[in-house]
View (cartoon, rainbow, N blue to C red):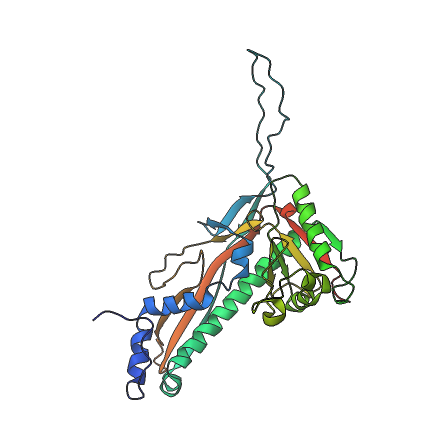
Amino acid sequence: MPHIYPPAAPTLAGNTLTISRFLNSPASVQRRLRTLAENRFIADFLLSGRYEVSGGALLYEQTESIYTDKAIEAVNAGAEYPRSPASPGPAALAGVVKWGQDVPITDEHVKRYGRRAVDVSLTKITNFIVKQVDSVSLAVIAAAATQTHAAAVKWATVATADPLFDILTAAAVIRSNDQGYEADVAVMSDINYARLVANPKIISGLSRESNTSVTMTGDLLTIAGLKILPTNNLPGAATECYVLDSTMTGGIGYERLESPEYSGDPANGVESWIRRDPAANDQWIVRGRRPVVPVVQEPLAIYKITNLIA
């Protein structure tokens, strides 16, 4: 009989047995975790590079120019072409950190709540790993940002603020570095996202004759060619907006520890391991982990807008 995922909703009589079959299948648990984590990591979008690490540390280069060291020259007929080195950027080293957690699921909880007992536990593990990796990654991005300006009018003053100008200015400065950067995303707190959406200049430039208009849905996915990502994992007080080129800013180093009992891939999600409690305490133990390190390779691909709120 073929394996079906997800398993059908259990009947009351077979509840414990059905859940046990699911928990005894590492592949099923991993697929469920992957589904829960899918499209949740903002860090994975902002830092799009992927670098497999061996030995626990990632060696990478920062601010590597797209040009050779010397300017190009005119070459006369039959003359020798001038040579120029193409120097790499300065080297940096970052150590991988293994983030993870065990969560017990008691037999009583499975008996009383069925699949909900499992789903809630898997969701909580995923939420914490996403929050931790995103928070660390956003802190790395914030620390690397050297280009900045204060909003001319605080975004909290919705009626007179001009967030569109602020964002376009940031994108223009990133592009003016002439290193091939093209800003494609703006990251801000949930409250500043709300202020952006409610801004009169933003509202007036959006389609209104639609059931999917921003006034109907509250969704503002793209503005001026930039994807807008709200998050509550920005470091410190949420007074800043980060505009950046997600294809150039940096990446995430990951380490495949090759533990045979785990399922999943740390490059793009959460690894999992599930087992009966070895202490025989009438419960299952679900573990999630992700051994990763975020790095910024191109600080000039980031621009910080400050002073958004009082």
